[in-house]
Length: 244
Image (tube, rainbow, N blue to C red):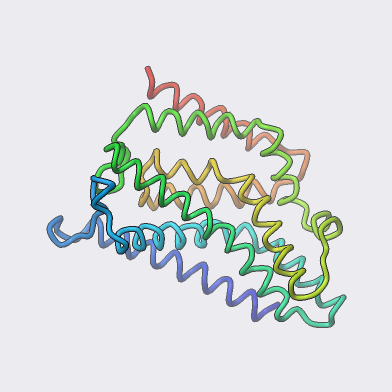
């Protein structure tokens, strides 16, 4: 586990460094020298799609890996008990988990493509549509109260229960378990990721706050749901205020 943990921490730190670098490039370079996604969706090239997708994929790794570490650690411990080693099982589990978020990055890329086309995002990838921001905020706020969200959050909060109910042997089993956990995590956090369209896609402060919130939300005991519901109320109030 120390090797796998070190690798995951290195990937997380590397992803954050890339995000900080991208943010600095956007804020410090002259507009004429800066890459920006075309406002017309039909003018996007394959390079534009690749750059935006890479940005989202790095963002997903940076924001979602920290909250996955407890589950990966629990899985690694179980592998050492069953197989007397955790490699390559923990690695396969981690890659499968990330693959779910990398696939979701495709959805986010396509959404950004359309938002630029509708001129709901500025060339600097900041929100330029109060009603879109309000819709996203209220949707994310209401989702905090949904039974599906709470069910997915329960699986993320209880590594032992997840491993007991979803265990599969072998290398393919490790990958399938990682994808299953990734899907539960996606079910828990997809709406929170959409918030980046409301507050600015490259808003570093928002990324840090969301990452810490997700980490805390998944770490709290099962009987404590005050944080989730308080966040839901605040998001709904914020979205409603934008509509007034």
